[in-house]
Length: 190
Length: 167
Image (cartoon, rainbow over all chains, first blue to last red; front, side):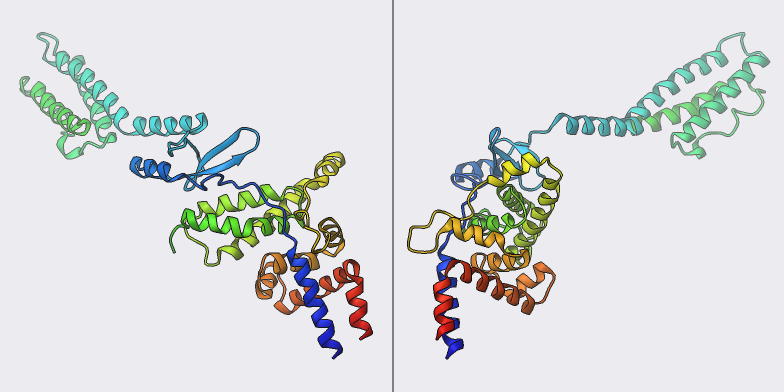
């Protein structure tokens, strides 16, 4: 009897207490809550992330992408901050430097070296032993660089035509090897 | 489990935000921020939590405790200004208990009792869930709740306590 009465009194008190309503909180999704239907359509059509509306008491309302947290425009366009843009550009430059850009520079250098090499060797009256030695070194240097750049070493003769017993063979051998290198490089560039 | 739809988040907000703010208020002086951040975090979840309400209470609890810790590092003046803050309950219409007095009495209870009362009475959480939040058993959560209610009743409604005791 005592327990029943006591429980009833507790229940009644709980009910009175529960009537009190906790103070409300300003919604981070005001007005129509999340993006308005027309905004949502625009966002879906644009293929951008869906923005949500966040309350910022200092600067009014702001939209935030619900997927990546970046602040967006009303229709979901991302407002990238400059550090993000800078980081993206740096990554892009790094990628270019390690692949395409570096390859383009290498091709340019190779073309210049090839021109000098071929000119030196084929220039009439300049096929002295010194010139041959220089040409051979240049060739080996060029070959090493080409291998470092990923050219298949099989396409490059290990030595530039051995001894220049047949003078016409040497420039031809150089030319042939260099042409193959350059063709391969060009195909990369494209 | 997919993403939460905007409608679900909206519904959760309208049904739960005020109780969550009251829950956060048990630890910190910036419950609105805590609750808003929790909902933004929920909206960003790639996978919907199995129990979004329990998830929200967990996040709000952790954030509120963190906010309280960082709040303690502020100067005494700032804390005093912040603590004047918002009322815990909307003004009562005269039929029920006095809102300000109830808030004051509630604030005087130990934190485990306050937490159990707020989570159960206004948050609608079962005691098993409250136990999980507090890192205790459902029975312990229930005991805390009972003690807290009894203490509140004694302070806010002494007549009913006396009557029940007399009978």
